[in-house]
Length: 471
Image (cartoon, rainbow, N blue to C red; front, side, top):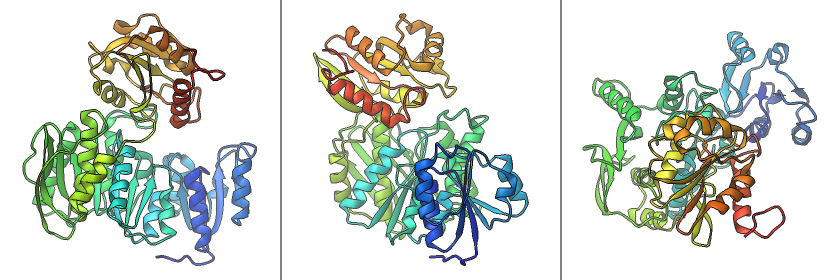
């Protein structure tokens, strides 16, 4: 574990959860730490109390000024801060090293690293992996984009670290080296940050940029972009380049050698373990609690990681069968009068909405809306065919949703989530699914998707409480 010289000067940019954790870690290693955040001092009042207690005296709020960024030995950037900021470009040109919080974490930890990214399913898969490793009694850190800052893995010694990583977090990695890396899928997202799909792909595949021939890269063969990327990487490896072993996984076909598949009731694994042992397995697929092909894909990826790591298959299967998912991801929150209510508040992009809708065969009343991130709702036209009982656009994006889905627009509109749910209940009939899969961010009404999902659950489960639905 690295120890800093007491006179090293670091700057942490962005004081979210990850930024505060980075400050704490750097101070524990003797760095002089300064902080900079564009939010006002009033907005940061509670955070700054904690920062001052950590011994930080250089604090910049309401802006990022060049002079404040000068003469730093290290700048650590929080995930929400774009690395393309001009002030960071100028600091980099002046010779300052600029890294993300995840890069800081792995530099300070000796854990065997497992890293996972993708547009959808990250949290479900990482949470399942955590349950499998816990059942196998492996001392494991689980965090990253999941909620626990990655840099906290440096606070103790772990046998394994499982990190969920967003594209924003991957932008800041340099020497990042996971023994096992996984990309679940790639679909349009964060169009407000990336100029095109190529830029988004480039950010995601940074997860394997530091891997070599003894490492493993698990890719979803059912995703066209990932299949193409994986085949190119295999060719480069065969040509002698220092590239990882690509293992494809699929729930739609058998990818052949170096792969895993879940077809019907059968799972087939063809790979090897981290220690080089042959891994050739054929199983009867377990009964799992989460619906949809996308969840079978997530479960398959988790199983493959566990077996490559060397865990016992029986332990992995037991954990898979008992796993009931996570809040806000196709979470069943209640039933009333023959109608089932599902909270998929984490479905903040179009692909997630498609996966949610495709998970059900019963008629759906879909609550779609919130804060629009520039999504193309027309991509839902075909997936929604023969699926909907009603579409209820809500929130700031309501007009955009309705205009792009004219074939499904029945004139329903809701100014907010509660109004949308009231309309859904009035329209519902026995056998329907009321599904919150908003396809948008939550910032027009809520602080985050969790708060939105919690409110939806509260409205469904407590219909007689003040401000909630009438039965």
